Amino acid sequence: MPVWLTLVAMAGIAVALGALMGVVRWIGVRHSVHPEVQRKAVHIGMGLVVLPLPWIFDVLWPVLVMTGASVVALLAMRWHPGLRAGIGKVLGGVDRLSLGEVYFPIAVALIFALSHDDPLFYVIPIVILALADAVAALIGVRYGTLSYITGEGTKSIEGSVAFFFVAFLSVLVPLLLFTQVERTETLLVSLTIALLVMMLESVAWNGLDNLFVPIGAYAFLQLYVPLDATRLAIRLLAGVVLLTFVSVWRKRSALDDSALVASAMVGYGTLMIGGWTWVVAPLAFFLAAHLVWPRLGAPRVLTVQGVIAVSVAGLCWLFAYAATHESWLLVPFATSFGTTLALYGVSRFSKVSDRDERSRKLLGNLIASWLATSLPAAVAANVLAPHEPGPMGWGLPVDLSITLLTIIALAAVFFRLLPWLRGRTSPEDTGNLVFAALGLVGSLIPCLRWLV
Image (cartoon, rainbow, N blue to C red; front, side, top):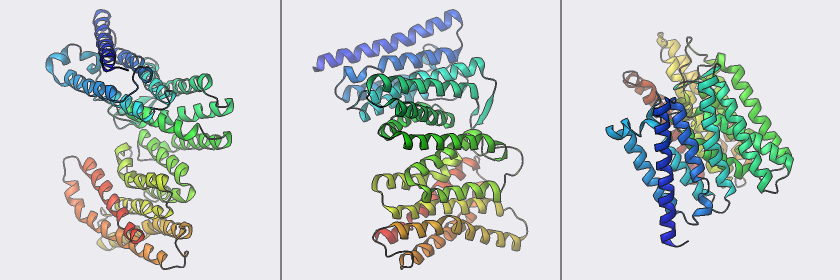
């Protein structure tokens, strides 16, 4: 496409988006339309405007330019007093903190860049982003009576169910009409992706669903469309089982509902990418945190951010394994969970008043954290790694020694930091950062033996 025609197309899209917001704002003021309805009308309109981008532009730079301009304009409407009181009311009239409108064009640019060779893999995530999220919000506002707890308040089960059905149709119809995928596989792919992106939407906060949902939908399409019916059925069953477990377990957990769903997503990803040997460490953390150390008091105060803090280091190693298939990566993966499990125990047992009892419990916590996570991982890694002599070789005792010393050292550091953490204005947020940082450090140390 000539440059002048590209510029004309970019200008046309900008005019269409501006007119969309102006019309929605005018209708909203004239007819006293609910702010959430105005916001989601713009959401749907933006999705429809950007839907044909793969057929308009054959290069990336116009989309990047429009994305940058959109982000600047949307931030100006949020922060400039004059704009915020005028057209900015279309997106900022709801009574909650959200940067979803800013994440929207960023998500469009990312999916456009990733799906450059297959427009269908662009269209499906954008349709889900434009329609499913908007329908879920509107159904939740109008009909939501059954709620679940998130870090930002509550969401409605009715809205999540609506999201699932719209996402299901958004995958099913394009795959049936425009691909050669068999009908059984198409049905299973659509059900699985709809279930997983619904779970992603339920754990998002501050508008991050506008990033999580399309990127997740694109990734799941790439992973699942090539699979046969049997493997797809296993993935669907795993998702259903985990979601059912979350529903049953929610009354016994200190995690809020969205954090429980996030835990289920971590378990699902670990199982699908790494297999059963990789599930042991996160499962040990979950069981220890909920059975050995049950929640204190009634409030369910642990949020998605806490789940991310515990699992972010491990997830980095999991994704590295997906890219390299190096079995030894199981050792740092498990050590990250062993470290955070030990930190969790220290935060609980440090409150014991009797010094001798506290010392016994802290020591038992360190040994239990190591045995539950690093021991099975080190054995599995030394057995599975092709260049290792086996579980009786020198590698296994070295791995076990390094991981034990790592967990003990970082738990001691955390114990020293506790008085400072508890004196902070936002101890939960600071604690999450410390958990994530120490978990990452704890996972890096065992790598030295394998890299050297």
